[in-house]
Length: 453
Image (cartoon, rainbow, N blue to C red; front, side, top):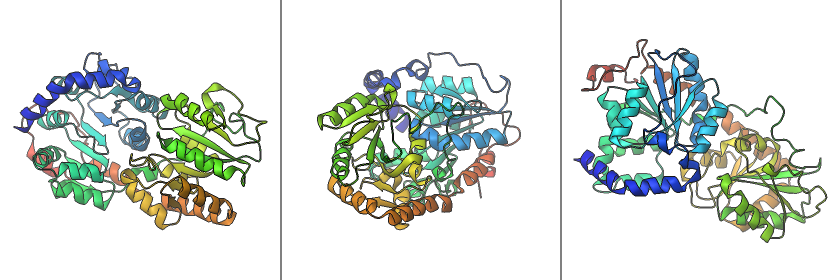
């Protein structure tokens, strides 16, 4: 019954879905492939006859960053395999091509129409489907299950909003059915694992493995030496950076105002704003100018405002450079937390030993926020005034700033290991002969024997 209802609703709203995707620049290019209209690309990294295809699905940039080390690990374990990483956005595609060149191929994820997902699965013939952070698509999971292809959720999490929504009458039964089509759920935290079980997942298929984002490699400068540098940003030797990364509308205004109030006391402090969606760069630039501040954009090639003596803002409107820029920061703020988004990657500045500030909306990164706060490597602020005062107090005390950065870095070091645990469990679903079964009833003996203990 749920299958019929879901697909009836999907067909009913499909015109709206297509219009929304066409309206979003970062989703438009991949739409033909997502509809199954583009031909499957020839493999670049393995032979067409390879019996092992590992399909990893990551939604966009953040998920690709999280899963890239896992893709490298699996490719190292199975060098003959064809590794495919799918995304739904252009930023995701670019991240795959930059971070996983020579390791994995990119393709756009199919829209969850039955005829599309069946066609894609038949083309790819995956031995395994791995997906990141609770990206659940009923038709895709059902088609994989019917073909006896294992599906594994990695780095899984359930935000409070999603958890409460899935508990609603009528939805809970549908969600339980969907969860039990997943071979194994590897969750970020005990809270996430408990929520998954409470919503109906088989406890034997739910494991708490930790957050693989703790195992991200430290970003490295480009080999050609043409990447981001202090010189390209127009910085002097005295300049110190407040880097606000992955910001959203409403947050940028608060951050700029907080920064402006600090500048008289800390004249060498410069603000770098990195909007989460770089297509908003012009809008952010106009906002900064309206407040009377000097502003330049990374993509413009300008050398900043070298002679400007007042507060200065640089907008980072290029992709793939924020994680490395945090290395140059004196202190960092991570966005999606003052605005009710749920938060982005708090670990990117922490890995460099930088104090991490964030707002109260951390539902998507609650465990990391708590760890940083408890270790005094991170601090939650409530609003613009709170941010300004917290930064002022810290900048007045260089020793406290150093201790806070060290504490943040220690949190990263003490919580690593999720990547290996995750990869080891995935390996139990990839036997030596990994040829996908044909459509039909699930082989329950294989399901039970491959289940991690």
